[in-house]
Image (cartoon, rainbow, N blue to C red; front, side, top):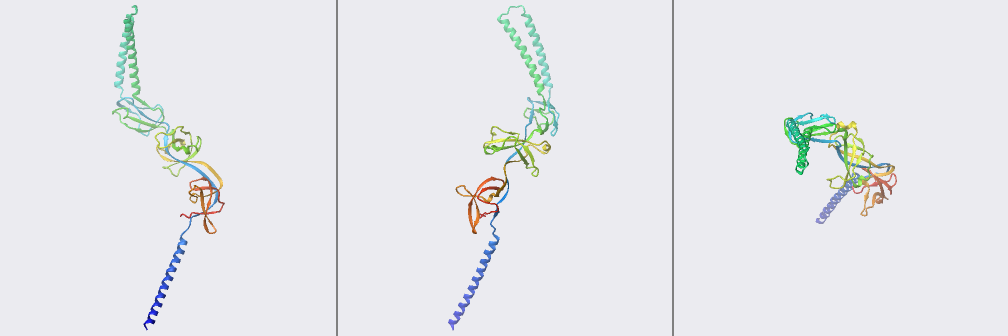
Length: 343
């Protein structure tokens, strides 16, 4: 009786275990099936299209005609004839120092000159009919030098008066005035007036040794400023520096592109952006996305394809590269499919 009971329990237990195994096997197969459905291997089809290789350089807006005016001597600021934002013409009066002291000093120098001249003429007259001894020659020479120094003093004081007035050497906008109020005592470095000619602004960028060989004067580019990302400006290289730019950690050269007149009211010095140049372009050529091209340990380029349903490595040769695409010059044909099994 007990033996039959044991057999019955064992049989029942085996059935339960078998049922659990069947359920687990079903769940495993179903999960593998779902995983296979949800796992998509990235792939791309080889296409024939145009590809363009570009060079993008960063830079900012600068200006050729940019001056900072300041007085050569200290004094009291008598007048400021302009304000920030004004547009001034070349040669326009900007500001001046108090010239009362300078004019008084000039008058004193003129009086000294007149007195020195009289003394000089009198000395010559007194020694006109006297034999020129060494002492008389020294007296006449000393009188001549005194007269010449007097003339120089007058001229220096006249120059000081002229330097007490500032005039703009260029036309342009007044962008900065450090001391805009008259009546303040200033030194040369404290009173400064900055003027920038908007007609001379340009986009300045730098290119390293490998990049500069792809550029030349007259080459066209497209500028996009960070402040106006939806607007693009066509510009042409006007100058490439012959010597490297100083103060840089690597060897780079300055590239200048003047900006069109119609855009200049919107620009401000220091605005940053990029300029893009088209280096080379090829029509009707085979291309694929760059991410599908791999490189082995020997530096050879290859792509992954399927051969008889299995992954296969196929070596290729490449040509031009754009931001996203790369040209395939050999190893693939149009409509071939490549895969990225690393994803």
